[in-house]
Amino acid sequence: MRRPPDFIVGPPENPYLLRWWIVPRNTWANVYLHEFRRSDDDRALHDHPWHSLSIVLSGGYWEHRPNGSRTWYGPGSIIWRGATYTHMIELPEQDGKPLPCRTLFLTGPTVRVWGFHCPQGWKPWFKFVNRDEPGSIGPGCDDSKPFSQRPITGSEGS
Image (cartoon, rainbow, N blue to C red; front, side, top):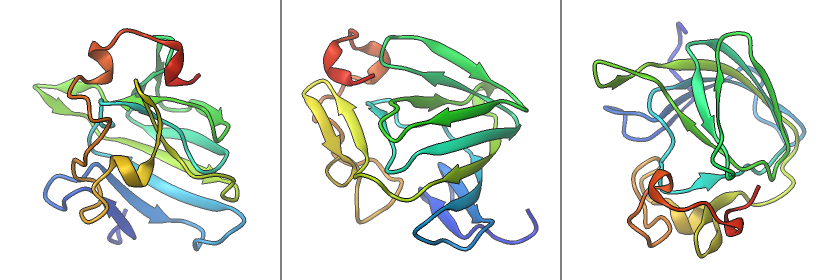
């Protein structure tokens, strides 16, 4: 992209996500260009506040689901997700560094508060992340084990 991102998630020196607004933000529908620079926080799967459609433009990612499945989405993949769809994104790595992935991300209107699926149950985003420093590590699930090291249970959504 030739212009700076409209929004950066994470510290500028090591961002998780760069976001450009393709359509100005509004309450009905949004179109974003996302550039993932790091994998999702692996302490818990998450859901979203709206129904969404992702189109992978370049790179790709592994998507983890509550049942333990892992699916690869590469360039050209189109993924529809309802607001309660629970997942985690993992970028592939080369020489120990994540490979960026660009997606076109379309959303509908906000239909719910989004959050994280912890072993103790669902936790709203504002109790999981560090609200004062977007993208930095917050309190999480109050459980130090990452999702990948936990047993699969029914309490983590679907």
